[in-house]
Every structure is written in structure tokens, then in C-alpha cells.
Image (cartoon, rainbow, N blue to C red; front, top):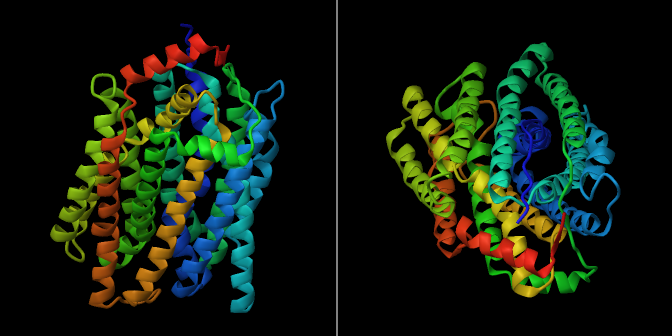
Length: 450
């Protein structure tokens, strides 16, 4: 059986694409809620509906892009041309989301809807081809795992830049006007994102050509519903994303209000979580060489639930040192599964082709992205509802009720969703040994060319 080895440069280039994508993803998970409430000036009650509507539009855009990547290809491949075409519009859309017009509240709300929706559509335009790209780079499961390790390492570098550079530059460049500061800082992030996507395009090669038959949308849905392992990943994606986004969205509030930190403390708290995740990417690639990746995935998420409860019980308001230590441990453990998850998607697609005799690729990746959007929509609505319920008030001292709510939103609430995520993985069975039989079957049936 022929395998495809990737060069280090190609893995770095592939990783650069996720660094570009994380300009948006990390911003949406870590700073957009805070930006909208404390900088832009939206009411917390308006956030819930905004996040839900935007993510519904994003889910539809993901599905559309999944269909497009299945239908069109050229000499560059099936996925890279979209990155080349949409990189610049993607960067421009990011800039406009973080632009705060000096308008009446209702007009600002319309602007927030419009710019956020456009950015979400542009993110689907580059995101679906990017997450699908790994299936075209190599068919070797270890190479995919290694490439995804690079990918997620660079993703966390992008997140690190957003968490540590954006707050500091926003304060420095704003000259007392945080809205101007955030606009300038995110403009820099957008430029870096465009450059990283272009670097990804010109350093990678699509060498695996899968046979994809033209199928109606209804047929693809029916095939995916028969793919039990893909459905497990869908459930995992929704629950895990809810946990990530709730915790990430409230982290800045936790550092500022619950721990009583200044701008430097807030930046450091966000950054230590990202730093732990970067180390986690390296550790995960090493651990999966001798420990079952499925068990690693399952057990780490169950551990996250336990650590989350510990944080809630042990850390008191202003307890900075303990909060930093436990948040570092949680952030390290929670991301040990990440390279496994993104490699597993491609494996479930191959599994589905062997099981049903037909391949659903773009729509399968798009469906996972839809699940991610669904998780983000649920989390965004939950954050808005909970901040309102706990009576959070921007830019002032918080009540004991609000502080307790913020603490729960960082720990116990997301921990519950990670517990569900871990339990779902008891249903997942595509280990490396099992996948080798799937690959052999695919070659025997002539499903792979190249």
C-alpha cells in the first residue's frame, strides 16, 4: 500500500492555514463577547439572538461550501483554489467586524449583524476547504496525525497572538479609545491571516485524489446518517464546542472581575491558557505514538470535567496564583484530544465509503463545521442568557451573584459539556489498527487514485 509522506515545510504550511483561521476562531471564542459588551456597547440580552442567527447563517454557508468543494477541482486541486480566491475578502471581513461606528444603538446593532454575518460566510469560504485539505495531502493516518499536530500548534500560536497582542496593542494604539485600539489591532491580525493562507496555498500539494460521485443533497444526508462513527464525532463536536466557547468567552470576564486583574493580568490569563494548549499539541503527538488515541480522547475530557469542578470549589475571588495554575492544567488537558479529533474526521469519511460504497467528503467536513457552528450558537446564546441572568454590568464592580455566575461559567458549566463529550467517545471505535483494515479495503475496491 502506497503512503504519502509530507515534508516539514508542507506541514508548517498546512499549519499556517489554521493560524490564519484562528484569527477569527480565537477572536470569536475569547474576545468577541467582551468586545461587544464592554467596547462596542451591545446589551447582553441582544447577544444571544445575534450569536444564534449568525451561526445559523454560518451553518448554511458551511453546507454550501461542502457542496462546492465536492463539485469543482482544477490543476491546483480541490481545496487550495478556494483559499487563494477568498483569503483577502476573509481578511477584510475581519477588519469590519471590529470596527465600531459612532451611530445610534439600533444602527450599531444592524452593523454588528451585517458585518458578523459577512465574516461568518467568508470564514466558511476558507474554513471548509481548509479543514478538508488534509484528506488531499496524504492518506497515511500517522502523517495526518502529525500534520494535524503542526496545524493545531500553529492554531494556538494564532490564538496566542489574539490573546496577548490584541489587548495590549488595543490599549497602546487606542490612545484612550478602546474601540479604535481594537480596530487597529484586529486589522493587523487580519493582514497576518491573509498572509498565512497564501503561505499555506503555495507550500502544500494535493496528491491524493478521491473518487467523488455526484450525489443529491438528500442522498448525501442519507449516507451520512448511516455513518455511525461520523455521527459520534458530530455529537462530540457540538458538546465540546459548547464547553470551549462558554469557557473561552467568559475567561476575560473571569480575569478582569473575579480575579480583579488589570489589562496585563487579563492578557496573561488568556495567554497562559493558550500556552498550555500549545504544549498540549506537542504532547498529544508524542503520546499517541504509544497510547491509544481513542482512549486519550475519551479520558482527557472526563478529566477536564473533574478539574473544572476543582477550579470552582478551590479558587476564590482575587485568588490569582491558584487560578492561573489550575487554568493552565485544565487548558493543557482539554486540548490533548484535538489532533485526534481532526484526523478522525477524514477516517470516518473513509469508513463511511467502505460501509456504504459511496463517498461523502465535502458535505461530511461541512457537516462537522455545521456542528461546530451549532455548538457556538448554543454557547453564544447560553453566555448571553447567563450574563443577563447573573446581572452582569459592564465596566463596574460586580455583585456576589454575578461573580459566582462568572466562576460557574468558567468551570462547572463547560466542564459538564466536556463530560458528555468524553462519554460519547465510548461509542467511537476507529483505532489505528481498525483504520488500517479500512484503508486496505479502499485500495482493494479502487476508491483511491494517487
